[in-house]
Amino acid sequence: MTYYVIYDSCCNLCAGFTNLLKTFDRDKLFQYIPMQDERTLSQFNVTPANCEMGMMLIDGSNPDKRWQGSEAGEEIIRLLPLGSAFILAYRALPGAKWLGDRTYEQIRDNRYQWFGVREPDN
Image (cartoon, rainbow, N blue to C red):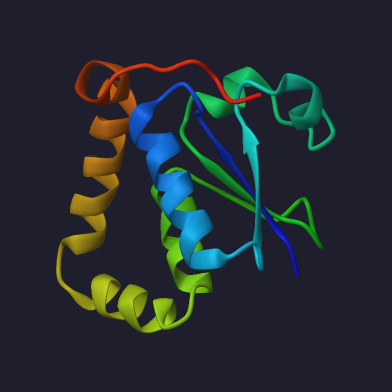
């Protein structure tokens, strides 16, 4: 099973997260598509405007099944070994999901100012 992680390759934090994920995943579950690769994204009917709401995860076996923003991050973690237990514990903590969603939105909206900009991946 393959999942496609759509990330902002101009964002230092996003690119760093993707590199870390590659280390944990070892190319078993995920393939990576920069948000700046409009040609590849068009194959999934993803537009630059869609990407403004944050990273995306697309199920390769069912491309209509997708997650975005903090939901994508949670699903990525859930798919990793022992990730389900972590996500269940996280969601069981009162207010943690709400706080995580708001935190993601703040990071998404301020990522270039807080973490810097880099040249996009090719």
